[in-house]
Length: 325
Image 1 (cartoon, rainbow, N blue to C red):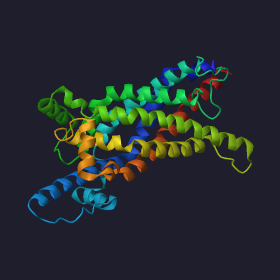
Image 2 (cartoon, rainbow, N blue to C red):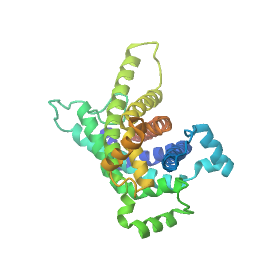
Image 3 (cartoon, rainbow, N blue to C red):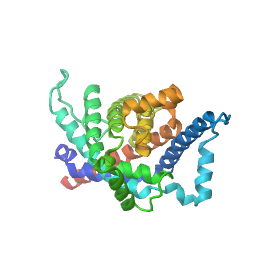
Image 4 (tube, helix red, strand yellow):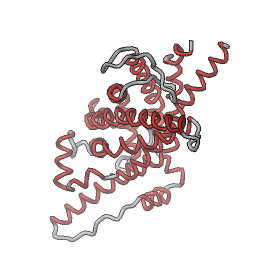
């Protein structure tokens, strides 16, 4: 009975929605700061280019996280750091709910099959409410699930990025949607999907791989060492931070390209043209633009979302087990 409930889509749908809401509200300021930093860098590069053509020497941009925070607060209030929370919630809550549901269904399906020569006699991970898979299966399940959900949620992502940016003066999500559709057509709502898919599929696949590996190692350490007596949520939290950091660093160049394609679609038309433009104008270092804020944000976001998700699922399973007894 418990195993049947473990694959109940409604359980994972609710767990994903709750985790998405908690994570996106908590890290929204970091998301806003990341977008603004990347935008400031682009504006300054354009200014340098114009100045160079006029024979002027322009000092490098001194833009830091703290200066960006102070600017946002000075122009509005502390609550301005949560600008764009509404479109973030609209995107993340259903997106997280669908992702965790699809991911669980995919993992459950794979766990019932013989893949890579593994005999599936034990399909439930010891320190997880999720099915136990091989590294290859975790990589494929995470990547495929994220790419599919990313396509569905892409319009909300585009609106979110533009709403956070001060390049556009949108006063509401409906205004942003209407403006994008009127000026760019329906294709504008999927601007940057190529870069997003190239970032999200490997990111999600690597994240699930690293996350499950970390949980397995820490779980084994807890079982064999009396000095490592930590709770299961702590293991989930630490694993989330570690997996978020590693997967984010590896896939950051695609996130940078995705953001620029959504903010300036006329200049960054596709992934390859955008990458060439960055390399020629900024060098290889340009692909690391905004990596610090994104790494911090993604690590925290992942740790919160996966810990909350697993605990919601574990609580639901325990509750149903008590009712059965």
